[in-house]
Length: 101
Figure 1 (cartoon, rainbow, N blue to C red):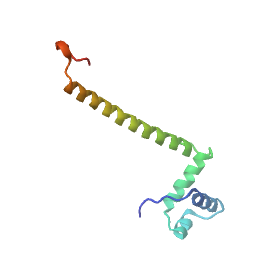
Figure 2 (cartoon, rainbow, N blue to C red):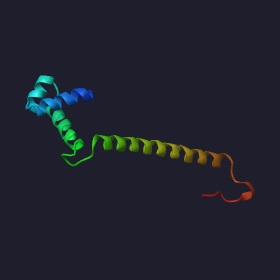
Figure 3 (tube, rainbow, N blue to C red):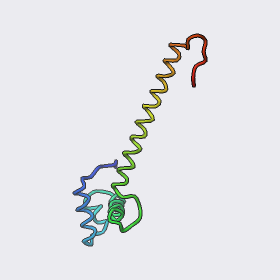
């Protein structure tokens, strides 16, 4: 069984059922999702509500966006450095001067 994305409304309903007294095992069986997924949602919900320590959903999203931006910037930097190398190879310095670093 692969990873599936569930809409936030569905997750909220599952968490509401948990709070109403249903067990994670019951819900997993009835809804055909893993119990671990349900417990992961509950843990994240508790973190988001400040009942448990950890990164909130918002903080996780910000961190993921920052990591993606860092990757993009590193790729741009690598391309710029390669372009500089190609320019230096194509146009050697004039008058025998040493290339700058």
